[in-house]
Image (cartoon, rainbow, N blue to C red; front, side, top):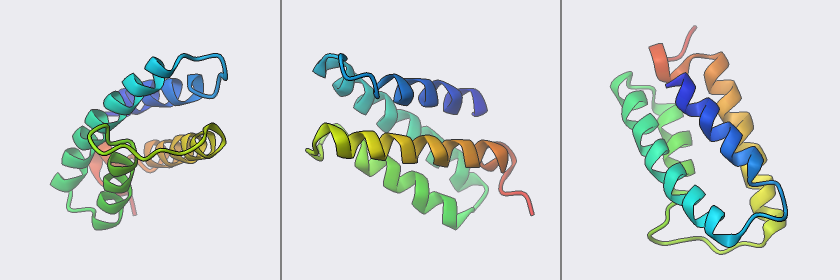
Length: 101
């Protein structure tokens, strides 16, 4: 799952480029939603309640069915925060073996 998060990090950083077309952001929403549901399922197996809430919230924010409409600046901040969360979860190995103590 670490590799999935690395791909998501790259996609989120790419979203910071202002010249991207709107269709990129629509596709990003779909990819982020599906990927976070996958990560959420993986974390649920480890019964890690704190991180279940974190990845569940990320899935809701990027959900393409009931999209949240925000301006580009706010989305950029959300994308950067999401990248930081992914980095922390990779370092703590949240999605691969549960939270390390």
